[in-house]
Length: 282
Length: 259
Image: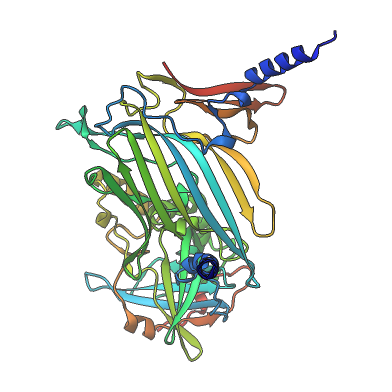
């Protein structure tokens, strides 16, 4: 069959239309720096509680020393989109049963699935928000000296219009230490976050606004790793997932406005299967 | 034109300063924290031993063995025995708590050398009565036999391990002729689950377990890794002496001089 030039052009355009990478509104790994959509229509912007869609940028540094004193630096830049929640405070009766939720006392973003969170140690949260903002702090303890050493903090500011921003800066913490020599030790990072509120219900699993396969933090990021003297490597990593050795991403993750989808292939001994995980608004 | 030249010169100078700061400042963060560095100051590698005596709140005197092992600039191992009433001795087999730590940095202040350690890994072993490691030492073999030691191992990890995973524990050494004076990283000589606010039911279970595995009961002193008072006089009276290890006796408490 002979295809004429105009027909080929139309066919190409159609194929491009069908190809996910050609979908202008879709946010894939290579365009995660795209602006977030606005807060979803109808959400109560006077309350901070609910599900938030966050965009983050993080620049982290590792250093490695050889036994002869040579220092090698590794920089890891990440940009990602992720769902997170701000839960209301549970109100309990005398028996400890939850009887209602107090949305005027919001809790805090967990951020646990962000790339370097577990390398900063445990964040200490304040007792409550200070107006429209709060600051979490990280530190480590020195039992012999009986002192604590501050290593970082993150300040989250809700703007009252369904958006928030956050900035954090962290220095070296024991949690990111792997060995004195010939080991990559995490020595700090700078984190910025923007967020838009997308649901008033602070749940990913049981939410009247959308259908979801996720229980908590979920999303993906692009990661650029640069080691001195080598070309940078770029990879896409899922957040809130832990892929087993026999699993891989078979359809690239993407956000479509507030929706998210990724397909994972599981390779068995004799056959393979694919499973799509998504969060789709109704 | 003159202004433009000045502007370019100022811009170039600012950029240079910024670049110098960028390379220098990013390194300064880690360099300025004495808890993390690559300065190797202690090189007298080997295994050292001492005894620690203390009196409990009922005025009874106790002793335990303490072994320090540093064989390279990356790892520091501390071993403490269970406490023994009155005098240290090896008449009966003794449980040893072995604490392997990773060194994060070394620093010096006056004549004292501070070694910062992290991520302790605990496990237990047994030193045999009279140093007899043979199968014929039935009392030793019974203490060594599973599941006792495995249970103690997992208990030690669950009790001690988690609380110190994100802490930096400083070990301070001061050379005194051929020996070393040092703090203990277990400044409190009491292992009291009662201080840890466990429910009574849990304490009862622990009591039964301690009785079953022939450990000192809950109210007895037992070394614990925790914050405590400075006890310089005690450490000075019991300096570390160098020990000779062998493949089958890594922690030769039988070589430690008893007061």
